Image 1: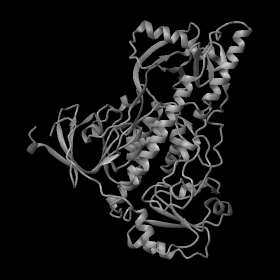
Image 2: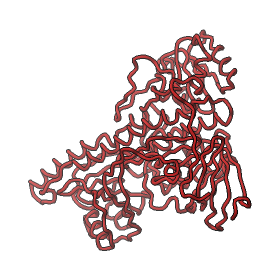
Image 3: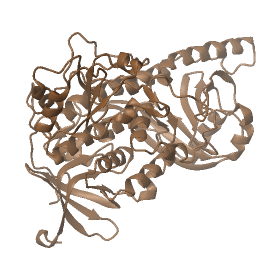
Image 4: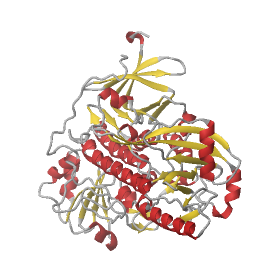
Length: 561
């Protein structure tokens, strides 16, 4: 179709990619009342095929709580009565080396520092929930089977050409901003000329999906959710009960060689993983590359990258999707602020300042988890039915369980990250900004996630945050009006909440605490600042200490205009 006959649409934000991260960005923008368009070249139902992720992290669950959809996750279809035990074994029906007991989601309480907890909701359940939530908002225009052909990253707008794959019709979409949530090998990252200067290939792994009710029946009361499979060479694979019923995913760790899979090879590997002759149906063989990869920039001009488009990491730890959802929330409130007219010129640029260091940390930690698992020793006597075999299994099981312990206990990764170095945070002096990846201790230091405290049954401090800035006042004698007046002068939405709870006051540590829309602390003190306008300008990105304005350049990933 000639350019002059091509239909044109306009939108605030064009999101490309309707995986969990793109859907999370859509949901959060809708929650903020920002009209936008979401496109994905795959059919809606295909998004949940061959699921990769299985755990929704605690911070992601806190955002789902904000959106009012926790119950949707809990009732998505995964049986919450299934124990989450982790078993280290030679095969699912083979010899058990060690077992990490983990209570089922229905009975496992939330930790003291959050109103939520990790939830098992594999992608075959999770994606359909997010699809339903995103689709029910009038602010979201969601178009499946729609492909991005090309785009121009102009100074005032992004002009995208998209194609309806069912009809072949092309049209132009003019967006104020473009969000690339289009996964690994992102066409948007490629079109922007953004890559990684330090990519690492860790292994060429393979997911094999099978269906077997007989396996469930044979396991009986010994059934667990996750199995770490160990041989003489050490850990070689893992296997999880993907739907909590009879669908299983075997993940072969692999090495740097490209695997050559056929039915015979796959079935021999499955037989080793099962450890006994069990009837099953082979559903799919999906090779993939395990990478350590973070792009050098998260934004260029009016375009932004999130999720696998911005970073790829080993799934050891379950950080990937959850890192991407946190990026979606960080980007969403900043896009909304700019569209609503109160953002400073440095606010959107701070997305890269804040999220890229977190991506590096999480990617490196996932790699460490993978290498700890791969480096854990095996033993030639592992299968021996003898005293030497029993000793070997005990020794190897304990070593691997210890090596992988921090992979299962990583609250610091999920909740302990901080934006203390961000140009839009009023950081405090001499405050350590690194946290333990495994352990998490609540703090209200600027940049950190604002702490959870129960104010009354069912009502957390976290429930106060999100729509705009929230000013928490723990001392009624402190006059906060100068800050409120400064926010009003800049049209920054700010809601003050007075809290008399002494536990909350002690946890937050200051009389006044300013919390951002994403739930991170922006500023705190025991009195109003001498320059309240300066504080407000800092946290909205109008007073920054580095070059803040975004550059722009025309790009086109496929050469099609």
